[in-house]
Image 1: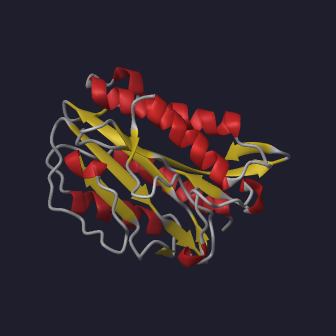
Image 2: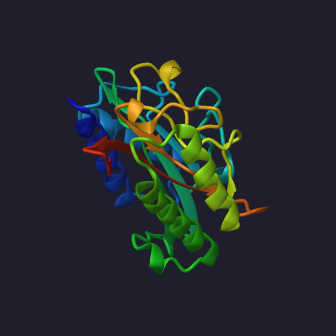
Length: 229
């Protein structure tokens, strides 16, 4: 499998679980369904601490936690709920990395962000869309990870949001071993184009809110243009 194929496993898994999530489900059930789907689709394991699906709901969505410390809570999905799912399939040490925040209203997934009735949730997901568009507009092969870090974090602040990552990081390179990743962080003067692929995964909220939002894609340069994998 190549990188695109492994990433497609993650994308297809999110599409699948969105048709299956319902009020009354436990987070552990969602995690199990996602991990079984990825393995059935060609993943041979999970690269991030051997956990295929990190699942959070409600006020858990604002928590930034290392995979080393993650425990799936015993929460049950409510008819109106916010759920973040972060997937990390791999096949032969080739990684996928993909996350989405999903909104449930009246017991149904709201696929169109503009149709979300909860104003705060809608604004958070629209801001995620804006940040990913800004990445595409701003990043060139000559942009460093540090420059992207400062640029995006400034936009997050200017728009009245906060970066929930405890170091304000925004993503990392795709590697063969998790300890070999480099990050979109202060002090990293490597060029974005110096790696084959990198993630962009701003984890944001508004001040004093219990809810967080995340959208993660893998990106790469092709003939100088940044594309989503």
